[in-house]
Length: 99
Image (cartoon, rainbow, N blue to C red):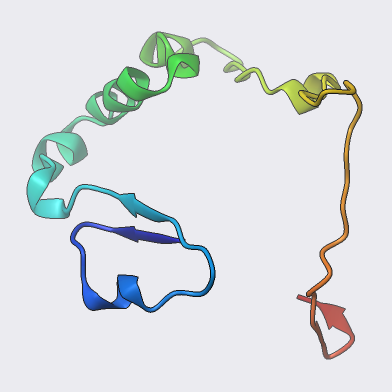
């Protein structure tokens, strides 16, 4: 997987499958406005992720708030409704640790 602001030659040098995700470069984002007021950052996140609705209001609630995550509620979004685990076949042990 590659996250990039522009296409370049390294994106052609991949294995069997690749994902290229576009992103904005620093010159394309109003950094000064964002760093001057973090509410603007949260507003930008809210415009993309529905779970962040009213984030600036909720973050000021004493004790905070929780974002809803299915797994923390033991709800598994699988066809069977059960948790599915898998072991990665290509893990490499280094110094007796799996990495």
